[in-house]
Amino acid sequence: MQHPVLIAGAGPTGLTLAIDLARRGIAVRLIDRAAEFFAGSRGDGIQPRTLEVFDDLGVFDAIDAAAASAPVMRAYLDGQFAGEHRMSDPVEPTPAIPYPNLRMLGQSRTEAILRERLAEFGVRVELGTALESFDQDADGVTAVIARDGATETVRAAYLVGADGGASTVRKALAIAFEGTTDDSLRMLLGDVRADALDHDYGHWFAAAANPMAGIALSPLPGGRHFQFAAPLDGDAEPTLATLQEYLHRYSAREDLNLTELAWVTVWRPNIRLAQRFRSGRVFLAGDAAHVHPPTGGQGMNTGIQDAYNLGWKLAAAIDGDPGPLQTYEPERRAVAARVLGISTDLLDKLVEGAEDAMERGEQTRQLDLTYRNPADTGRVAVGDRAPDAPLKDAAGNAVRLFDLFRGPHATLLRFGAAGELPAEPGVRAYVVVRPGEPAGEGAVIDVEGHAYNAYDAVDGTQILVRPDGYIGTRQHMTPAR
Image: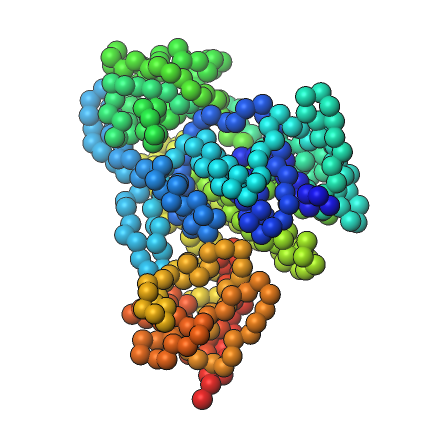
């Protein structure tokens, strides 16, 4: 098959999956029915776990350079300054968690960086190309795609629907999209300029009598635009004039003029989870599988991690090992259900006007998401995210565990000298030794015990880290004498 994987939908989820497959040498075709690339901010919060994914995919530096820290929000009640607030306090990096803080970047810019990375592998998004229909059999998927009035029949080993909440793929499979839509609550979201406001800060405008119901303007990096969020009254139209009227009403100021409306949408609570994430050789990922409220900044990040989980498993199946692919649905559907719960709880607090509705705690960073067996109570267990830690190589050069993990391979870590390392296809093996211990070929030296501590390891502990940065196996080897 010329393209073993066909991906419908070129948002962050589809792009991430295409990059992960392309870097493994898997031929991929990425199509999107849109005539132009998305040009709005939408999912503008990049969570710490997603930053780790971007590190592995080779786009972290570009993302970090373009992004900004979460802004301090200045609150105004009845037009009067009422104080400053952060959604979450900055956290200092640790050896185990090098990227602990949320980064802000408009989704369209994130997608552009991912497209640039994908192009390095010779793959480009096919715009204006719609998935019309598909059938599958025991050996693959036959899809019909349409572009410029012509149709083409495509044969692929697997099809992935990353085509959003209105997914053509999910509907064709008749997979139930369970959840609720609340038409009584509508929000207006958009990107707009407000040059009278300090772009180094976010701004919250509300009435003193109801301080939790108001308008938020959050600065977007790379220009002068703010992302705008406000409750939408009745049947009001999503126009610049509507945005302007709301801002005058909530801010009690006439000098705040909005210009250059770059993107606008009407959002209503549509909280849904697909009943299944897989049907034979067809998979769902991202918004096609789960739709989140914007509260907590979870939706885009969860979709990116769907793709990161799925990529190496598809590659393994194409290479003849279908076993890992069986775990995609149970692992990711459980995570999506949990994250939907977090987002929904935050939305409920916002609607109820709770004072802590804007707080973002540890749970939104997605660093504690795990695939472990609930019966396993160990501090570090199979299914947990694999932590980072500082090391030195045999020549004394500084390296990190994340440096060893980076790439399409799995990584075997053996703590202490415990005999010869096994040679397995697709696995890179290292011995982690304590300072002062002999560091032979394939050995790295722990720094101040951080690696041993992060993995709750003793001499003889052996850990296999999957290509997606989660612990795959953990066992104890008898140390060599």
